[in-house]
Structure formats: structure tokens, C-alpha cells
Image (cartoon, rainbow, N blue to C red):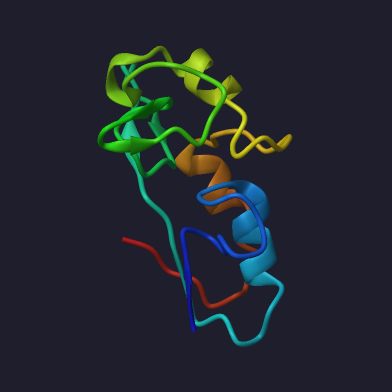
Length: 106
């Protein structure tokens, strides 16, 4: 099974909790996340162009701005889907994958 956007059915998409949940299940063969840089160049896991709702973004955070035009601190503080989960860096998501899980990424 491919855990789409981490494990979006069980935790807010593209977040550390979603990836942790996916890694806890033997049926997970692969974890897929979306990655985009912030204005400062830090790569974060987020799908939509904007943090807020627009015609081309679902508005799944409590923040405003276009991800690649917004400062890293603002993006990382954005809460996802009304939960305590925030937009993570790609490094944080990769660190959530357990050692020895047979994981590779590219």
C-alpha cells in the first residue's frame, strides 16, 4: 500500500503524525509526501500552492500566503486542518521514518 500524503486518512496530510502512522503499519510499502520550498529555501511538506483557501488551494491551514513566497517560520507555524499538527520540513518527515525500515527516498 502507498500511504498517500503520509497517511492522510488517519492524520493531517503531509505531516509528521501522518508519516509516523503510516510507518507503524506493516501493510505500508511506500510513503508519499509533497515537497515545496518556502521563500527562504527550506523544503517543507505541503501540497497546495497557498496556505489559505483560493480557487486553486483548499485552505487547509490557519495561515495565509503562497508557500514559496512565505517565510519559513510562518509556514512551519501553520496548523493543518484545525489540529495541532503543523506544516513540517522535509527533514522532519524523513526523520520520522524509523531506522531499519528498509526505507529509501529520492
